[in-house]
Length: 108
Image (tube, rainbow, N blue to C red; front, side, top):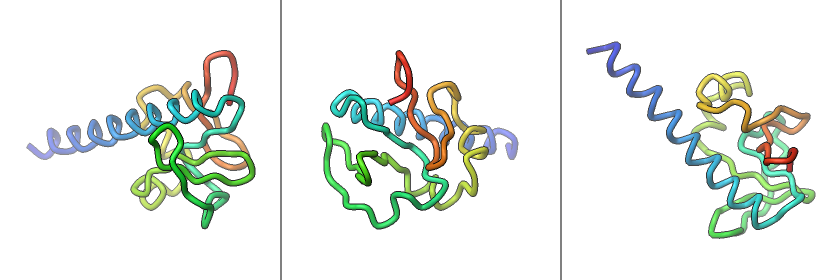
């Protein structure tokens, strides 16, 4: 039963991150050409103003948007942990801010 519970928890996290990336895609479509981040490794978005874009709560700093999960930001200590639970790692790329959504035809 322990193994099943562990697998269930991992699948829950993967599913939650899939939903987060789906919301990030909505923001990217509404604001083409902007960087849309799903994980902040540097505190770049800390204290940034929040607003709604395409019905999604975001933080906007310097022309970039953060579609951040409070749970992931508090529990994952690095981008590597986020990658471990991402069902499609090719959908995000690491840069000096954090993990940025990759959009078809390049990064946003």
